[in-house]
Structure formats: structure tokens, C-alpha cells
Image 1 (cartoon, rainbow, N blue to C red):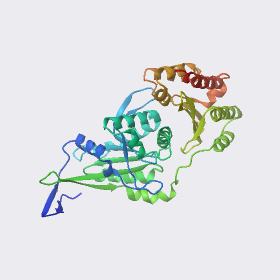
Image 2: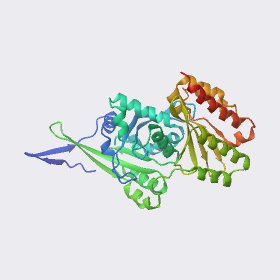
Image 3: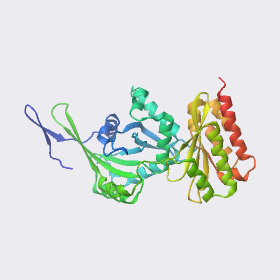
Image 4: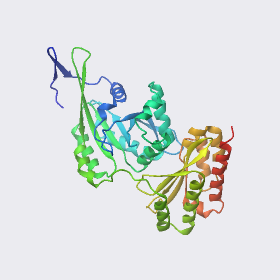
Length: 382
């Protein structure tokens, strides 16, 4: 970055001098209000990237049952459902050289695991209300043909698959950080890493000029051809094939029963993660409520997992039906302990149980399906 002025030519020649941001809070507020300075690159359909703010100071938990342990400066999302995590530092903050990198990776790793779609949606809608922006207008920039539920499920799936952008913003990017950004971009397959250097110029009037410069694009462009194109949603056939090829017959039966139940009573939405996954939406109280997600990992150590979208359930139905649903689920493989811990956290979490555990306990699968049936039936009551 140069310290030379820039010149505005109008009725006369006006010199604008580079001026540092007075505080980090001023810098953060500017990015939240004017995300256009962060827009670079294209969406999957070739349209220009436009970031929309989900939240400032987004809480990042480190477990299913804990409150936020960290606070990310900004979380944005684009029309493809790809999240952008932004951490802001001024050049005078020595953490901008190396420490901020570990900080950002901590946020990304935990956000990918512990930001359920309902929490993301609530954060976005709360931000819109605080900014005086109507939800209709805000969603008009994002949804296309999707419902809000489908959009935020897509965002959550992007996070789980590591498809996100990590953006370090500063008024001066040191050489050490630039080198780390370029290295990470060469090594990380699904996650893009950038550094934004934003120079501010001021003159004698209220005129301000902001000049962004992006670092990291070269490394990202070099690997673009090897990355998958538009995300393909998993199909029922792909789930059935994965179950047959990866799991024993007893677990295959669990997978089939869950998918059949959702197909008969609700609807299935294919995931876009790097492994076969599908989410189930059930009709409750006139709403399509995301209720569970079934993941069939290729890694034998992870196996198959059934995760319950309690954040979505409590968001749509409120605490009492959610508590009743939790009480109706079977006490299997520590699921009861997870739910008990969540009850004190407003049920904003994603408790899970392995498919092996459901297969090994005779009544477990039936208990899960019965709890879902009960949720649908009680949800019809006023």
C-alpha cells in the first residue's frame, strides 16, 4: 500500500490523503453497512457476487450444548448459500500478522459444526429488523425459487462441507499474513481464503474514498478448474446405494426406514455436502419443519449419523412442542443426555445419534419414528 494521495478532479484538483481508521469498531461498522466493498468474484451462475450480512459479532459455540465461546466480527452469505466469515484488524494490531489466522480457523471449524440453520436464520432476521430492513426485501436478494428453510439448510450444508470463504480485512495487510493466505489457498480444496486491504482516503470535506485490494485470488483461480461446479443435491438413489455399499444389513434397514418414513409423511431434501446426506421436512401446524438430517460418511470412523434439527423445531413451533418432542425420543446412546443439556439452552442445538446405536437397540428406531408421528399430530392442535 502506498502513502501517496489520490486526486479528485472536478472544478479543481483535490488531494485526498490516506487516513487510518480511528478504531476497529469504526472499521467493522463500515463493512457491515457497506458490504459492497467486499464483493469480488462471481456466483456459480456467473452473476456478480453480492454479500448480505447475517450478523455482526456472531457467536461461535464449541459444543452442541454450550453458549458462544468466541465472537466472529461478521458473517455474510451470498445467493449461492456460501457463507463468508470476516475478521477485522487494524494494522496497528500485532495479531494481524499470525494470531488472527488461528483465530479464524477456530471460528470456521466450530461454526461448521455448531451453527444450525435455524440459528443462522434467526441471526439474519434479527439483523434485518435491527437495521430497519423488511424481510421481504432482504430475502428478495437471496432466495430465488427457494423457501427460507431451504436456503438456510443450504447454508448449513455448505458450512458442513467446508464450502466457505475466510476473509481477513485490514487497512494494511502485512507480508506475513499475505504469505499464509496464499499458502492456505493452495492447500485447502473447498474453502477460499482472502485478505482484503482497505485503504481510506479523506480530503478537506466530508468526501471519503475507499480503495479495496484483494490478496489470494491468484491461488484460488489456479485451482478453480479442479473444483466441482454447481452443487449437486444428493438423491434417494444415492443414499440407498451408499447404505448398501458401506453398511451392514441392520444399518441399511435403519436408513431405509428413516427415508421411507420421511417420503411417506413429509418430504426429503438432498444435501450438497461431500458425502451422501438428506434432510427430512415434516408438516407440523401448517409448516414444513426441518426435523432431522441423515449423513452417510465415507469415513468408517464417522459412519452414519442421524441429527435432529432442534434449532429449527423450536424456531417454528416454540418451546413447549419442542420439549415434548425431546421427551418422546428414546434414551439411546447418550441422546437423552444431549437433550437434557439442550433444554437449558433453549433447544438451539443439533443432537445426534449413530445409526449403529439405532440398529443395536430394538426399540430405538421405532421410538424415533413414533416421536416424529406424535410431533406431527400434536402440532395440529392449537
